[in-house]
Structures are given as C-alpha cells and as structure tokens.
Image 1 (cartoon, rainbow, N blue to C red):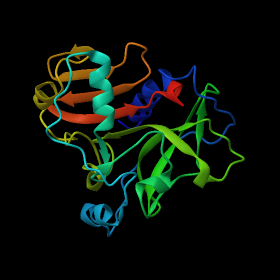
Image 2: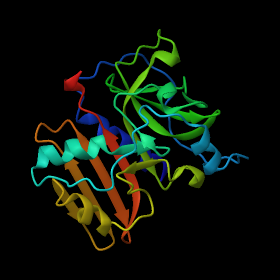
Image 3: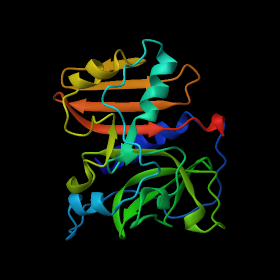
Image 4: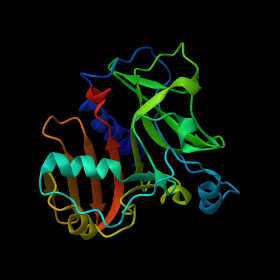
Length: 223
C-alpha cells in the first residue's frame, strides 16, 4: 500500500513534466507511516489558516463542458476546511505545516516530499521547480494527494467541494457529472477529471464504493 501511494503521486506528476523543472538527488521517499500523536484532527483544523478565507460553495452548478468543469472543481478544492490555491507553499496551509527536506527526485523530473504537521507526516506532495539550494520555506507544491494509507486523523483534510475520503463514490458523479475517464472493475472505480490538454487533473479512486484516494494536480502552464 505504501509503494502504491508513491506510484499514484508520480502518476499525477507525470502529466505536467513538460512544464516542471526539477533537479538533485536524495534518499527516496518510500512510505508514509502512521505515528501516534496527541493532536486531534479538530485541533489541526482550528490551528490552520487559509490561502483564502472564502469557503467553497456547496451550490456550485458544474458545467457539462469538460474543461470548464475541471476548472470549477479546482476552484473548490479545500484543505483543512479552507480553500486551497495552486501552487502553494507549506506556510499557505497555516501554522504547523511544513515540507520535509527529505526529497526524492525520480527520473530527474519529479521531486516528491512529505507534507508535515508539527513534524508528523501527513501525506506526499510534488514540488514545483525543486531547487535543493533554496530554503524549504521557499518551495512550492503543484500536486497533492490523500489516501486511506495516510494516518486516519488526517483523512478529512483534502476535499473537492466537500467530497472526501470515505464518502460514497456515487456522490462524485451526482455532484460533478461524468468524468473525463472512467475505469471500473468489480470492486474498484477510478474517476479522472482532466482538461483536454491533460495538465489539470483530479483523480478519485474507490474500493467497494467508498473513496480511498484523492489526487489533485495544478496546470503549470498557467504560471
């Protein structure tokens, strides 16, 4: 499961490789282990500040046009209950959040590291134009994901218009409409919402009808 999570993060990163510039080498990130903490999800939420104080609207009417729909979904991404804008610094997420300096660079293209909360691993992010010579506080992330392999107390952090881990997969199509791509088997479903340029991407995976993974990648060509 831990290896699967890293592969999913790299899958999201691959769609924007032509626009990202990464360099350097370091010890590979291979897992996101769960650790005990006295912090509750409630305290994490209360301490985090927002990129924007505007909460997402549950009344958004999503367009039937694919690219417009994906743009609307990206505008309704929240982290810790607040709107998340891409790309973002760890400090944009609020007090206590930081990026780990333990960065893995894959194929000299994708720089992946941990998002931390008070030193505890939350999930993985992919860095924009990673430069090992820059201070960690100056790094930006353009891709973030959350899965059921992450510590359970962080499962409510990342949502798309209030839909998150553990929700029924049927709520996805009910709210957003038909995905750009669908892959289904007996117990698993993969819904991908992406622009026709294949650079804005939201991936939602489920098992036995319950969402177990959400990944969001920002369009670097807009920078």
